[in-house]
Figure 1 (cartoon, helix red, strand yellow):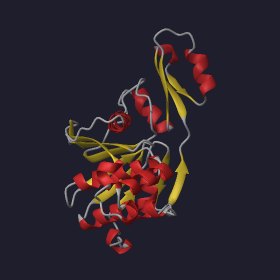
Figure 2: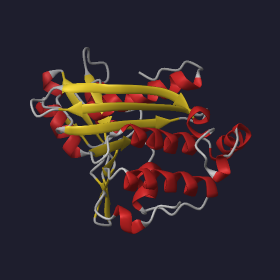
Figure 3: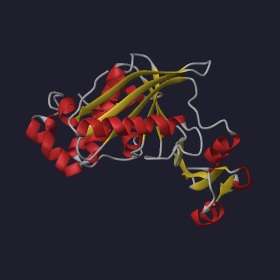
Figure 4: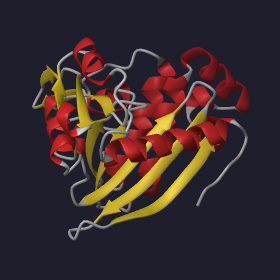
Amino acid sequence: MAARDVGLVGMIDCATGADRRTVKGRESHHTKVYVVTAPEDRRGIYETWDACKAAVHGVAGARYQSVGSREEAEAILSGSGVVLSPGLYAFVDGNHEGGIGVVLVSKSGDGSVAVLGEISTSVHEVFDTAGLETLESPEAVRNALARIRNVLAELGGLYVALGRVPAGAAVTIVHDYEGVGAWITGRWRAKDATVAQVVAACRNRIAEHRIRVTFRHQRGHQSIYAGVNEFAEYNRRADALATQASAGRRNTG
């Protein structure tokens, strides 16, 4: 049964991500900048790679990286870093080989972080028996993966995560493929039949389990060399779990 939009009103939101903000239908793009945290005389925020390179080239012990916004750079430069607010998070990722990685994390009010679970699986393990019309057999899943590639695995990560979130809970889904949030919130329209069915299945899980979902986009493969960024850290772990799954090793801890 397809999810009805009325059942999702007030249950889905889109939060500020590393590269894009969507608030009540309005969008603004953040501009990538570069932050240098060491040595002391080179510390600062640089607007372009050329400016950053001129500051750090040949400098022993230089620590620098690109970040998705000036706000993020300022947080890293201040030493506070980019950290999770208290709450429940699901970091989801998938790759073109069909590997899926999910990390469930809880941040408490005292600042402690608990990893509630790590899932390394594949599109076949998720969809072969999911009962979706266009993914009705292992062959159909293989064909869908060949056609839409990483999109199937990225959405598979969301589908898996929603199945692990307790009924009635609030969760922030952190994803590096923009479509994960854009399709569920309706900002993108699913034109592919398989994408539309997986999106509907995810929306059904949200409605049936009364999950309050916020989506946050996190730039993929982001360095954490120059300072703390918990969003990037757990995104990298989800990516590693997806890679592990596509290599044939499975963990459902």
